[in-house]
Length: 97
Image (cartoon, rainbow, N blue to C red; front, side, top):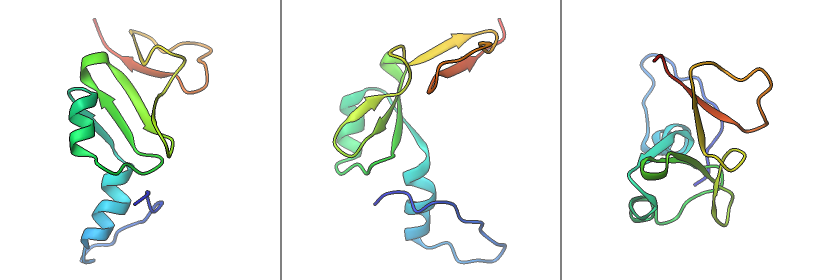
């Protein structure tokens, strides 16, 4: 199932399994140790799903036929400051040294 978009939940509303899967699970960035662990956990990925692979520090998105690395080939850039002119799709992890 692909993500269902955005939904504003209200207090007291019944949260159905389909809502959890379509609004929350399919639209989160899931973290896996490596690609093999991701494949074992997600047998039928849907377009737009995102994952972070710890072993290679890379964010990937499923494009409907394959997992594709997000960014300009470097995965996640770790920096103490945000770049002044970032490339489209760049993911920057900020840290304080």
